[in-house]
Length: 178
Image (cartoon, rainbow, N blue to C red; front, side, top):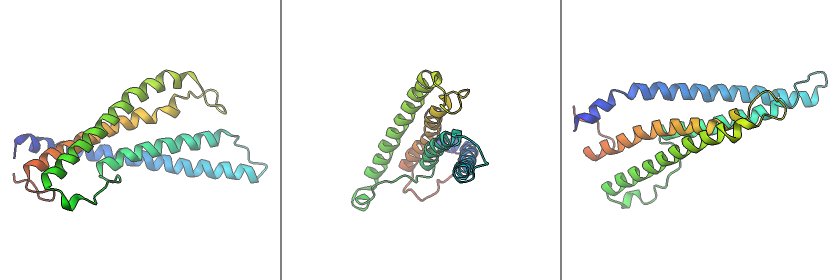
């Protein structure tokens, strides 16, 4: 096995930390989402509690962050939906090649999300404000797209390295001989 793969394995703890931080962020957004949704429902039925309509916009923003960031997490864990019906009929090299093609395609999507999402968030997104919170820029509503694009790129690079490493091994499940 080429030394490059052994060297790249040494940075795997960095990916583990990034994944842990991203999971923590998703959990915090979920907690905020539950609290804000509870407050929004409570204000509808309890007249002396007033939080206004800002909770509904914040719930949607939290959901946007959770949706795209958890999708980036799923890339690392290979938890996305994939068709495996024909995998047992295809040669192993073809499967590995299809994995590389799929990972490169998702990497390209991550780059598009990062570049155009950032452009959109900083131009059009930063011009507007939330309706119920006029002091808060809409940038924060569109920021999850480039942020998720960044994490998708990072985790896809790890997956692509693993795909190429699989070409050097006999199979997916075996550990590399050092």
